[in-house]
Image (cartoon, rainbow, N blue to C red; front, side, top):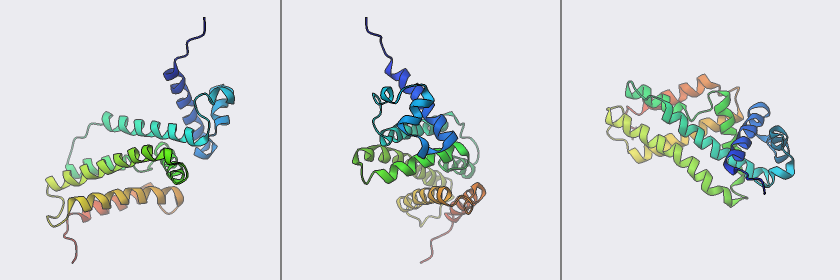
Length: 200
């Protein structure tokens, strides 16, 4: 009788191996061969699930989205609106090793969307998560009187989304110039600036 393989359990095992490699050695080291070795599999066995590093990165990105969603769901978002919004938005910034590794996956996969259109839907899903967080933040601040009345919520959502992406990119490319304290300070300054009317 052929052996029954639980594909979900095997993929969970691979996810753990993949993230051990990413966390220890960086995203670029997460190849089919290295992840197979980490899981104790042959590269041939792993290729039943993933043929290329892009497919591995896509799998890692799915895990990133699931991890971020779980983090948001596990938090108790109580307290003053300004503080809750700050904490919520900091969840998507690379402020520690785990989130930095997650951001590296996002960046590498984003770079591949131009040559591999199949990754597009997954990147849009990731971007939608940051956009929704930005939108929620702007509307929560506005409802509490922390956004100047003359500001357009849609425009401020787009600006905040762009700021979060930009801060993430700068933190990955220039960690010496954009350490965690600087990331927090720039975000805080932006949120405080929403209280003021935009100059004509």
